[in-house]
Image (tube, rainbow, N blue to C red):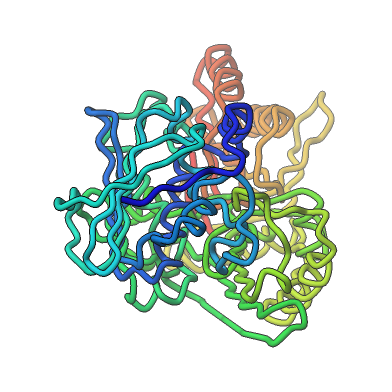
Length: 478
């Protein structure tokens, strides 16, 4: 039997730590996994059972110490001083995690092994006196000389950040699947996870570290503020490279959409924060976020001792942006970003539409086809309108209005409607023109309010308003 005391186990402190700055329950579980990796475990088992409202994290690492003074440090609120690792930089991961996971401080349990001896601790952080009993039965699945098993209560709503917007209730199976997806990314830069020296399992499923599938450029640099590894990706539409595009786009962080761009920061191999816009994106990219960055993903891994690298919030789920060391790192990343991909200049609408027109001509050069730019309609009694594009294809007519933006406004739709009406009035009564808005986007979903307004235009027109939305690659989006 071992006894030890907590130095400052006050209930008021526990209440304070239950309000730690975690996004949801996924973050404190990740803290416990960090501890396992730092404890040199080769296998970590995460079990989540929403039916019984219980969860556990088990590893085969070195377990907890058996010295009463060291145990007191483990279970006392506050920083453990020098007893920190690169992942467990604040020395309070287990304490804060369990406080958030079990706000009542009544249902968590702790069991560990040291040199095959089993130790059981069922207690609370708000207690001052603790007793560790020597046991003979290991409650986990990993049979090794050392290890740690923590159990705690769990609730489905605690993972609300993983819920799908289209499915706000989410069933347990879908939540577990999303946790697995998150875990495949979260330590994707950690060398021990990436090379297979430590395995993560969620409900029996081995989590494979995610690797970006294409266009990777990486560089490591010895910097005074730590080592910086940069990996840049210019995503292409996965449908061109991968058969199961829909599955791929649903199951990764880095989706190919009209706004998929940003910087994803890792610290010592563990995901910390995404910066996808705002002032910090400008510092990293050297200019404001723009749709010309679409598909541009930059992963940044900062490694080194905690005295050399920028500080994070105590819970490690975001940077402390006031840390002056970030300025140097941002400048370095900005420089390397320009070096790899160059300064991209916005392509003019005229240039994009000219390429679009050339593509259409090339695709239909064997058929009866004409394409004209800047066509002036001759319509007596009205202000002469100008069309961006006018195409005839095997007797069919398409009217184009091109926009360099990746979104559609009501003004664009109204202009397209007017030009289309004028075009139809100048044609033979038996000929119908198809109106097409061309925009600078790869994926587009028409907002509901604009869909409603288009339907109004259709209802007020005897022969409908067959509007289509294409991109500059002549692919139909909507």
